[in-house]
Length: 274
Image (cartoon, rainbow, N blue to C red; front, top):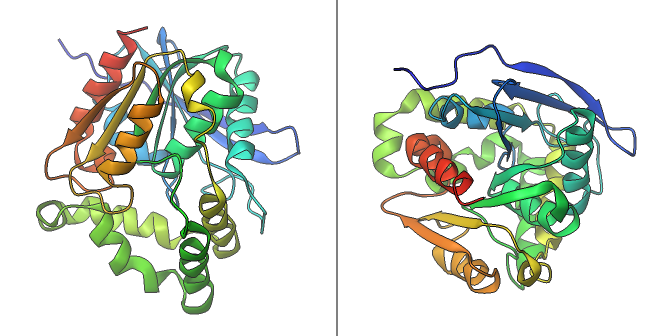
């Protein structure tokens, strides 16, 4: 029997507390297990489509285009991860979702950590994929350099760098259609918003809240993730009570695109721990 989601997604726009508009979509809105997924930097809610297709039919899955991304409000910022977390809370309030399994990848994981810190009553379980609570001492300068490269040379100047970090060499060769789709989303970004988001990640430090988490937490990271390597995942696992961690062999940074079945199974298992 087919257990995958096959209903037409329900979608719309929600206004945040500061007047921004956030695009949202729900796959299988009648589902009883609620999951909210937050995408990576310079992607959009469609980042999760391959994972959603592998989830059980009882999962109602909310995805958003984060502020500055996709169809949501663009601006020069400044942005904070706490602001992005509040945006998700406002979308959930708009949809009358009291709580959900909240999971994010890369930037989305930082936002999920901020959400878990400041909206803990809305988190039934937490998934942290290919992410970190803190990028390190040199993060502000490194992220500033990346953002300004986009400003000065255009997003195309970053594509080669991004592809080598996003995907394993084998996946780059075997799935050019998925790679090209990710690149197309990346290239469509608003550059001032991209710069503001890079600066946001450079300043992000979510370490303080993690010891207080009291919900099931799962941490996944690719074995060869050079953007947020396993050592960063281990630091989160060490700080979050009861967290479990798994290293995915041969993977790099975009595990939801490279291994959607694995991520879907992990999220399903996380839901069973509630």
